[in-house]
Image (tube, rainbow, N blue to C red):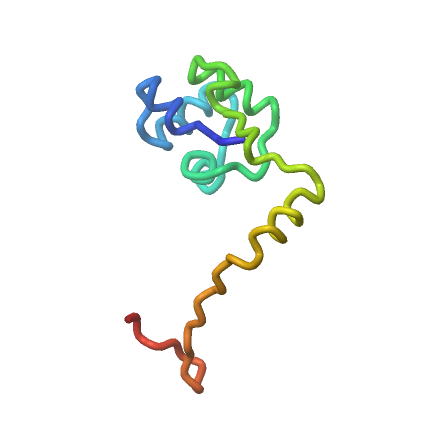
Length: 109
């Protein structure tokens, strides 16, 4: 699932997380600044269904506006291993970044 809060809020004329946070508080959902930042700028780790209800009421939207399905990201158990085995010979090794003996990193290239 892709979290689409920011675009949904923008479509309703809400451009700042603090504005949405105030509107949610007016409807009884008090969210800390840290959690609001996570909701606004990223993918929430966890969210109560009751909180989703309040967000939908405040934004005047449906749950499908906030959560966009991404079925192409779903894989069956064992499927990844077969795909990796098929591609394994063509994968590129990660870049090795040298470090100094005293533990400090080298300046950027």
